[in-house]
Structures are given as C-alpha cells and as structure tokens.
Image (cartoon, rainbow, N blue to C red; front, side):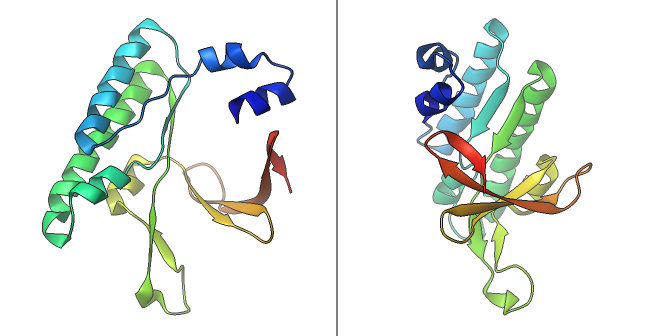
Length: 166
C-alpha cells in the first residue's frame, strides 16, 4: 500500500519505505518493550508519527473477565502514559486504533457500540475519531471527542492510490 501511495505522488517507494520502521507485538509485555525500543530509536533518528494498531487487543486477550479488569486497565494506563511521554519528549504524533464492543443495553437509542478501554483510553486521547463502513465502498470518519474540533463526519473511500473523497 505504501508503494502504491508513493507512486501516486511521484515519490520513490524505496526512499519512502526506508523512512518507515515496523514492529509487531505478540503480548502486552512485548508491546511495552517495543515502545521502549521506539523511544530509543527516536533518540538517534527523527520520527514524526507513531501508529499503534489496536492498543487494547493484547491487553484484552491476556486480562480476561471482570476479575482482571482493574489490572488490565492499570497496565493499559501505563502503556498510554508512556505514549504520551513519547509525544512530549520527541514531538511525535501518535495514532492508536482501538476495538469496539456492542452495547446490547442501548436498544434502539444511542450508539450500538462503545470503545474498549473506557475512561483510560478517553482521557489519554486528545481527539477521538470513529471509523465505520458506509454504503458500498465508502467509509465514514466522525470526530466525536476533541478539544478544538467540532463534532463532524466525512465520507471517504480507500483506493489503490490511498484515501480519496467520496
């Protein structure tokens, strides 16, 4: 995908890929360790963006049930504080993705899903954007919590060239 997007803008995909570092975490402890390694990398090289795909998934799979909820939230909070510290120290933007869970008690009123992580995720995030499927191949991005942006949504599509307006 990165190479396709580079081609769209007339960029050399190899140069672009040389500027991207990637790691996959296999446990919440490993995820914490990768965050430390990323911080060490940033002391040597400038980075502008950190993306954590599913900040909560590994914590959810390892801390199961209500009995472990407090421990899970505490460890998730530590991870998010380290991300915020990374933002402050290195001036990077951080984007995290998160899972949602169905709200069976919402009936037909209010949202039918809610983000995992509760207040821990909410308080650690500056701007929260909900992504959902639209009609056909469209997607909808809705800003639903931001200190300086109005609650608003837009439609977009994902193409071979990247993201485009609907």
